[in-house]
Image 1 (cartoon, rainbow, N blue to C red):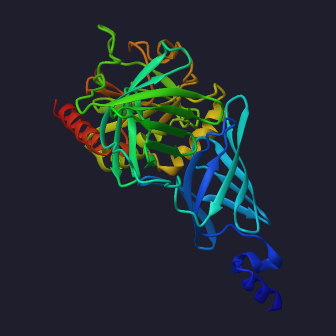
Image 2: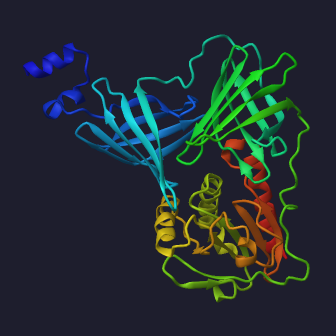
Length: 412
């Protein structure tokens, strides 16, 4: 009792005083940082909760709350396994409840780590040093410029600003950057996101002419690009159906790959004959694939009785079947996927992946790619990329167009 009283006087939590002074992972909201060597910390927030006698946390990015339910506390240490993308945190718990450790990504051929810290009872993402001197609301034509100045890519930034707070994303022809969260402080824009794969920081100066000019810090190495944006409400990306098509005269799509149990599955199987089939090219490493799988898994439960099937073709980071299977198992379990997912044995970085897996297509430009097959087995449309829930109205447009196309194919 005397020990408990002294702890309370010192302002420590009751949990920290239990079990002989054992430190605990405090409930509440944390400000977390991944510390890059160049000083460009990737900042994000997470919330810890006590649920049914165990710890869970939610990674917070704008309106997104990503549940992380594998959290283990042992003495003064915590281990947090992210639900996707094969990454985890290991950290020591200090007396004040702060965390100090590392975040590790387990890649196909190596592990890569970055120092990680987190401060409890801190809801802010970036300090709001000054009132906003600019407004970034709207649609922006954006160019990302690599180390070689002729190496550039185009995107569309979409931002919503309320006072200092900014939420938004970047749209590209192969998908979106998911939920970006940040501020405008004075004439500076800062946005970041973290989901276990994406670990991004965007900074930009709001120029006097209203343009944006800044740096994009990508990942846990030294990757960064300059970027420039100008407001353009008419900005457009290439039509998603134009990037990849079926080759003229190629005939029905043909493939045969094993499912997670090693059983070969083909479009020629009776299960798929005379049905509309959606084939999604995906990977457990791909955040946009996570968003698409979340949608397709629920959609399939409600609609497969109408004569629709879905097949996932997985392009994992390794050609090893068992390693690919392990990576996919937790991914598919999280979304309760009830349609077959097949392991192609081809990695996403393989430049000849289309020829090896789907020679009837003109190529594979990105993940996810979604192929719509009619009742006769012919390719009706191929959609490259995916606009997920972080894109707001574009996600709603995707759902509308997806259902309209399925209805059309079912009616044929």
